Image (cartoon, rainbow, N blue to C red):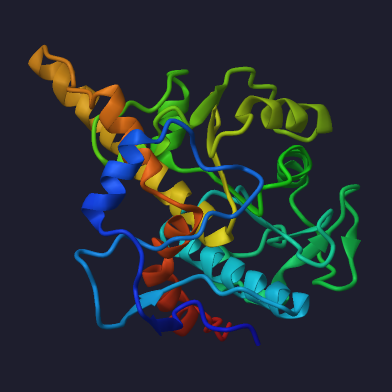
Length: 309
């Protein structure tokens, strides 16, 4: 079995302190590259001499171990989404993670199965033509989910995972046809890093609709699907799930803030461009992975019991 995501590494720390990293990032004009995974945990608080433990994403020499790791974490992410109410309207919602052995295949949750009890062996492996493969669960998959996610995975080789579910805040916000605003620190994660797809074409059964969504997201980490919801992507399934939950809550906060501001006859206060860009650039791919690990522990240890009926 792949190493646990909560495994910590004790090592001398020679990374930048928070102040040093802040100065470096404020001088950085570019964003993290798409074609490589950016490592680096959260900045340490001072000039650390003695070794400390940190949660890190593991690396693999055996692709079978990496496949098991991705499936294990995908299942935990799906359970977390289910337990947080993201799978409470029929069979809507889908999570995919690229297979490390067959990069043109991805794992996806089975159609019409509860998110709350998904295990790694429940996941289906599907190719670019939508054909379910015998290495995984031979179960039907969501055709709309395939159309969207297949197009995104094909257009973005850097995307390891994608998450889409229907939530009340995102359905309401997507009807406005606007982007998330930098009204708080958390929203800055998506500043200039999400798009709006404004051409709703009904349930996404046609592959062309999926390709248009993939084109709309471009090189960004999220897209607001007008009159539909949101989709998030990342270089780990943990990060994609974390970003989905974070964006959903930021959208809910903006709806509340806009309503309160409207009632008071004022406008919400926006964070400045430089500060918002700096805040977004703080996060490496590994840090976005790390942000989900407290939830992974809960779902991995407590979320696998199936009902007896």
